[in-house]
Length: 338
Picture 1 (cartoon, rainbow, N blue to C red):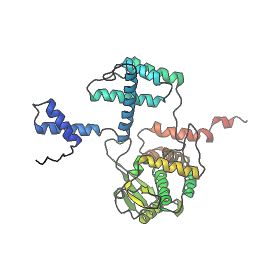
Picture 2 (picture 1 turned 60 degrees about the vertical axis):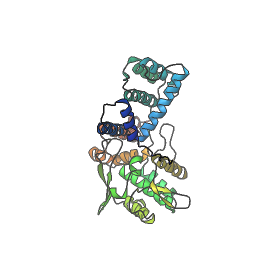
Picture 3 (picture 1 turned 180 degrees about the vertical axis):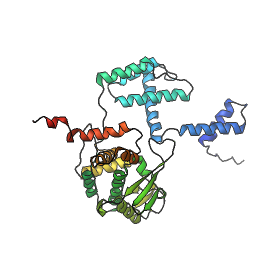
Picture 4 (picture 1 turned 120 degrees about the vertical axis):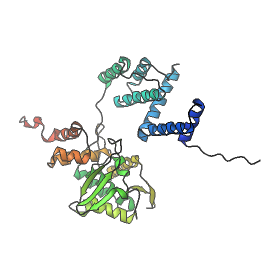
């Protein structure tokens, strides 16, 4: 007798099967609708966030099992004790994310966890006061820094791609996820330069999208438009992802770059260009976005125009970059006559 082939099931079909087993009274159509809702719920958070939450939850479960405690459901007191043990080894932002991961796991199983309970909230406050450290901020890369990065790129395909990537991230104030998410179809060429459609970003979880304009540069070597066109032409990219992997032989792959690849590319080129950061202000892709804000501000661009381009929702957040840029240029310490 021939056995029936095993057909792989999608997450949606698996959810339907569980619902059918748990709720016999549900019709197949109702079960499918509920399962489809669960699929969308799972897509509510970015994949990178879900990966971080998964690692955070695994760390919490290991801690609980080592102490004979039940991680699910947990109590505020147990979570507070976990935070106390982890307080010296992790940044406060990491601890807060772990609380969010634990709380999310409880919500998914319909077992709410009160994250405002004093056992959690006051423990975090105590950790911050006892051995909290200032958050690390990316070093703002200036126009001069960008030119040094461009000079460090060779004339091969990888070098051309990297120049286009740096110029577009800097001129567009793009996050690395926004840059690698760009497709040819998101670009509209206009006489002034180009318009790019950012379909989704960190602060646009609903996918409303945003369109920004980028103008021609003063010279071809630092022109985002000319450099991007040269990359697309030589890489023979006519559709799909703009920024792609280039292997050691110079072959351009079809798939888009991973966001972390932008960090690796920048790190490599920064070493070659002898650009270094500090412990508290490292060289990261976000530095190109921060550099756009500080450079535009120093060149007299109004706040509302900067925010419209960077898509910042908070003036306070945008202004934090400006305050840092003013520390050396307009510090009152320079007016003491020393």
